[in-house]
Image 1 (cartoon, rainbow, N blue to C red):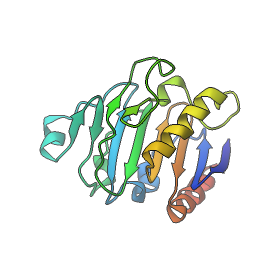
Image 2 (tube, rainbow, N blue to C red):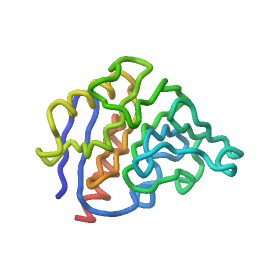
Image 3 (cartoon, rainbow, N blue to C red):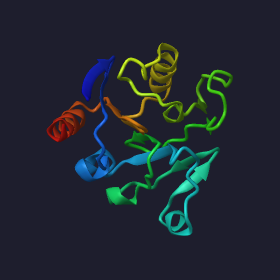
Length: 173
Protein backbone atom coordinates (compact mmCIF):
# COMPACT_ATOMS: atom_id res chain seq x y z
CA UNK A 1 0.00 0.00 0.00
CA UNK A 2 1.30 3.42 -0.96
CA UNK A 3 -0.87 6.56 -0.74
CA UNK A 4 -0.08 10.26 -1.16
CA UNK A 5 -2.06 13.41 -0.45
CA UNK A 6 -1.75 17.02 0.61
CA UNK A 7 -3.11 19.40 3.22
CA UNK A 8 -2.35 23.10 2.90
CA UNK A 9 1.40 23.58 2.41
CA UNK A 10 2.10 19.97 3.41
CA UNK A 11 2.33 16.87 1.25
CA UNK A 12 2.07 13.44 2.82
CA UNK A 13 2.59 9.78 2.09
CA UNK A 14 1.74 6.58 3.89
CA UNK A 15 3.08 3.12 3.16
CA UNK A 16 2.96 -0.28 4.79
CA UNK A 17 6.38 -1.24 3.38
CA UNK A 18 9.00 -2.01 6.02
CA UNK A 19 12.34 -0.20 5.54
CA UNK A 20 14.72 2.27 7.21
CA UNK A 21 13.56 5.70 6.00
CA UNK A 22 16.79 7.43 7.06
CA UNK A 23 18.89 4.90 5.20
CA UNK A 24 16.75 5.48 2.11
CA UNK A 25 16.67 9.32 2.38
CA UNK A 26 19.08 10.64 5.03
CA UNK A 27 18.52 14.23 3.81
CA UNK A 28 15.25 14.21 5.77
CA UNK A 29 17.33 14.97 8.87
CA UNK A 30 20.80 16.02 7.67
CA UNK A 31 21.65 19.54 8.79
CA UNK A 32 18.37 19.74 10.71
CA UNK A 33 17.06 19.38 14.25
CA UNK A 34 14.86 16.50 15.35
CA UNK A 35 12.38 16.47 18.20
CA UNK A 36 11.68 12.84 19.16
CA UNK A 37 8.28 12.59 20.82
CA UNK A 38 8.10 8.78 20.86
CA UNK A 39 10.56 5.94 20.41
CA UNK A 40 9.39 2.35 20.68
CA UNK A 41 6.13 3.79 22.13
CA UNK A 42 7.94 5.58 24.96
CA UNK A 43 10.14 8.52 25.86
CA UNK A 44 13.67 8.80 24.47
CA UNK A 45 16.11 9.22 27.32
CA UNK A 46 19.44 10.17 25.69
CA UNK A 47 22.38 7.96 26.57
CA UNK A 48 25.56 9.48 28.01
CA UNK A 49 27.07 9.35 24.51
CA UNK A 50 24.02 11.11 23.01
CA UNK A 51 24.04 13.73 25.77
CA UNK A 52 27.75 14.36 25.13
CA UNK A 53 26.89 14.82 21.43
CA UNK A 54 24.31 17.48 22.32
CA UNK A 55 21.01 15.60 22.72
CA UNK A 56 18.72 17.00 25.44
CA UNK A 57 15.50 15.79 27.03
CA UNK A 58 12.87 18.20 28.32
CA UNK A 59 9.24 17.57 29.26
CA UNK A 60 9.21 14.07 27.67
CA UNK A 61 10.66 15.30 24.34
CA UNK A 62 14.21 14.54 23.21
CA UNK A 63 15.90 17.24 21.10
CA UNK A 64 18.82 16.58 18.79
CA UNK A 65 21.80 18.76 18.04
CA UNK A 66 22.20 19.63 14.36
CA UNK A 67 22.22 16.23 12.65
CA UNK A 68 25.44 15.49 10.77
CA UNK A 69 24.89 11.73 10.37
CA UNK A 70 21.38 10.32 9.86
CA UNK A 71 22.29 7.18 11.79
CA UNK A 72 22.72 9.34 14.91
CA UNK A 73 18.91 9.66 15.14
CA UNK A 74 17.75 6.87 17.47
CA UNK A 75 14.84 4.82 16.18
CA UNK A 76 13.17 1.60 17.22
CA UNK A 77 9.70 1.41 15.70
CA UNK A 78 6.59 3.19 16.96
CA UNK A 79 8.60 6.39 16.64
CA UNK A 80 7.41 9.95 16.09
CA UNK A 81 9.68 12.80 14.99
CA UNK A 82 9.19 16.47 14.20
CA UNK A 83 12.00 17.90 12.05
CA UNK A 84 13.00 21.58 11.94
CA UNK A 85 15.61 23.76 10.24
CA UNK A 86 16.40 25.55 13.51
CA UNK A 87 16.37 24.46 17.16
CA UNK A 88 12.95 24.63 18.80
CA UNK A 89 11.25 23.94 22.10
CA UNK A 90 7.86 22.31 21.63
CA UNK A 91 6.83 22.61 25.27
CA UNK A 92 5.35 19.64 27.12
CA UNK A 93 4.63 16.25 25.62
CA UNK A 94 1.60 14.41 26.90
CA UNK A 95 3.10 11.02 25.98
CA UNK A 96 1.17 8.28 27.73
CA UNK A 97 -1.75 10.57 28.55
CA UNK A 98 -5.19 10.53 26.97
CA UNK A 99 -4.87 12.91 24.01
CA UNK A 100 -8.57 13.73 24.24
CA UNK A 101 -8.11 15.11 27.76
CA UNK A 102 -4.98 17.27 27.38
CA UNK A 103 -4.63 20.85 26.13
CA UNK A 104 -4.55 21.18 22.35
CA UNK A 105 -2.69 24.48 22.23
CA UNK A 106 0.76 25.99 21.76
CA UNK A 107 3.24 24.54 24.25
CA UNK A 108 1.46 21.17 24.45
CA UNK A 109 2.12 18.17 22.24
CA UNK A 110 0.11 14.98 21.84
CA UNK A 111 1.77 11.85 20.51
CA UNK A 112 -0.39 10.24 17.86
CA UNK A 113 1.86 7.40 16.71
CA UNK A 114 0.94 5.33 19.76
CA UNK A 115 -2.75 5.51 18.87
CA UNK A 116 -1.96 3.63 15.65
CA UNK A 117 -2.53 6.84 13.71
CA UNK A 118 -1.75 7.11 10.01
CA UNK A 119 -3.24 9.40 7.36
CA UNK A 120 -4.26 6.28 5.40
CA UNK A 121 -5.84 3.67 5.15
CA UNK A 122 -9.27 5.01 6.13
CA UNK A 123 -9.58 2.84 9.23
CA UNK A 124 -6.36 4.40 10.57
CA UNK A 125 -7.23 7.95 9.54
CA UNK A 126 -9.89 8.27 12.23
CA UNK A 127 -11.43 11.76 11.76
CA UNK A 128 -10.86 12.99 15.33
CA UNK A 129 -7.20 11.91 15.29
CA UNK A 130 -6.71 13.40 11.83
CA UNK A 131 -8.15 16.73 13.02
CA UNK A 132 -5.90 16.72 16.09
CA UNK A 133 -2.90 15.87 13.91
CA UNK A 134 -3.41 18.67 11.37
CA UNK A 135 -4.18 21.23 14.09
CA UNK A 136 -0.95 20.27 15.87
CA UNK A 137 1.09 20.39 12.64
CA UNK A 138 -0.30 23.86 11.85
CA UNK A 139 0.53 25.06 15.39
CA UNK A 140 4.16 23.93 15.44
CA UNK A 141 4.96 24.11 11.69
CA UNK A 142 7.71 21.50 11.37
CA UNK A 143 9.44 21.15 8.04
CA UNK A 144 8.73 17.42 8.21
CA UNK A 145 7.02 14.83 10.38
CA UNK A 146 7.66 11.09 10.57
CA UNK A 147 5.52 8.48 12.33
CA UNK A 148 6.51 4.84 12.18
CA UNK A 149 4.05 2.29 13.57
CA UNK A 150 2.30 -0.38 11.48
CA UNK A 151 2.48 2.23 8.72
CA UNK A 152 5.13 4.79 7.85
CA UNK A 153 3.73 8.31 7.57
CA UNK A 154 5.91 11.07 6.14
CA UNK A 155 4.67 14.66 5.95
CA UNK A 156 6.66 17.63 4.66
CA UNK A 157 6.27 21.22 3.51
CA UNK A 158 9.62 20.93 1.66
CA UNK A 159 8.38 20.02 -1.81
CA UNK A 160 11.76 18.92 -3.21
CA UNK A 161 12.43 16.72 -0.19
CA UNK A 162 8.94 15.25 -0.33
CA UNK A 163 9.34 14.43 -4.03
CA UNK A 164 12.64 12.66 -3.35
CA UNK A 165 11.14 10.61 -0.51
CA UNK A 166 8.00 9.84 -2.53
CA UNK A 167 10.01 8.64 -5.52
CA UNK A 168 12.35 6.52 -3.37
CA UNK A 169 9.46 4.91 -1.44
CA UNK A 170 7.48 4.30 -4.64
CA UNK A 171 10.37 2.20 -5.98
CA UNK A 172 10.09 -0.09 -2.92
CA UNK A 173 6.41 -0.84 -3.56
